Amino acid sequence: MKLYFLGTGTSQGVPMIGCDCDVCRSTDPRNTRFRTHAHVEIGGLNIQIDAAPEFRLQAIKHRIPKIDFIILTHGHADHILGMDDMRVYCEKKGGEAITIYTNEEGEKRMRSIFHYAIRDRAEIYGYAAFKLVRMPKRLELPECVIHSVFQDHGRFETLGLVFEERDTGKRLAYYTDCHSVSEKAEQLAKGADVAVLDGLRQKMHASHMSIEQACDAAKRIGAKQSFLIHMTHHVDHEKVDSTLPDGVRLSYDNLIVEV
Image (cartoon, rainbow, N blue to C red; front, side, top):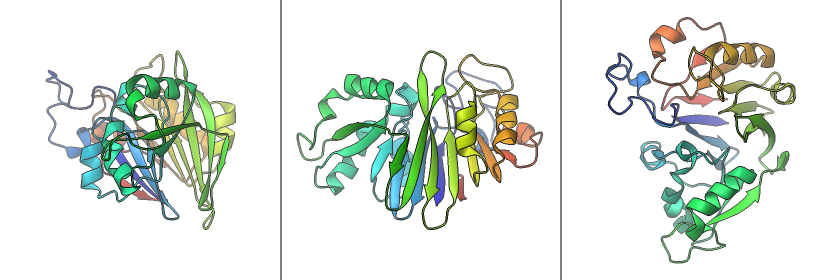
């Protein structure tokens, strides 16, 4: 199983428009953050987690050959506005719709923004087409099992995910955009090989975990290695990463992790 960090920043990205802070002016490439989204290769499957506005750029950079299906964790703009760039992957399927697994909130946002693409086949060859399916608690596939759990994200819930590869038994937890890791989510991810956790900044936030909260969640989950995502421009990679406990690191755009 391989995880591609296509973007690790917040809804505004880093550098932020009009900002002159040290991080936004940094020459460290790890301080340049596209909006948070990821790609998982597992047993021959190519699974896209969310689609940030920069998805097209990252799909080209990483030469993503196909998208078997998408999991939309929630419908916020920074996680959904790259969906129209899936049209080339629909072409590769002969115009057949790409399945998007999501929750009720994600489905509503997809129908609102991409109403023209919610169909079994593309209306015109070269257009995008999506089939919306509610994400089950346990998605059984020949290559893997994907577990899902609801997470608190302030005014609504997002999807947390745990991927389990059948051939190797390797497990990857992916918990973005959450205010906390619930006991249920913790147990689901317990002892994972890799855990990816929302860690917005040092200061507390109403709908995201702080870096301290994310480190505490990482300790409770006990993954072999944990990575933090969804960082703001308040987080200087080199300075903050050096303060994190053993087994916890900041992620960065274009990091590829073999699970």
